[in-house]
Image (cartoon, rainbow, N blue to C red; front, side):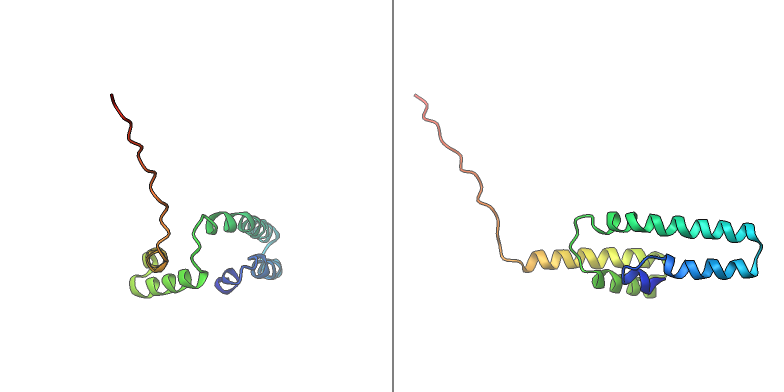
Length: 115
């Protein structure tokens, strides 16, 4: 699932075959509930992923992935989230620091003549 998520493919590619396999080894009701759950997860992934990943940050996915893996290795489950946030912030700060100064000119104050 992690590889499919990185490649931006839907989770139904993994959950669909698992749901059909589950029909062969379990009763009908739990298998049907799992199939409905897999369908809901896949449909919610279709609109939640663009909404949550495209929140105005132009950080490459590779930077976020490296941060998540490094954080998970260093700090466990909490590091999975902290590592990607810290590395993404570091990347954005670094790119802003290396960008040429393109600050807009401040508006000039006009002096009024008082008589």
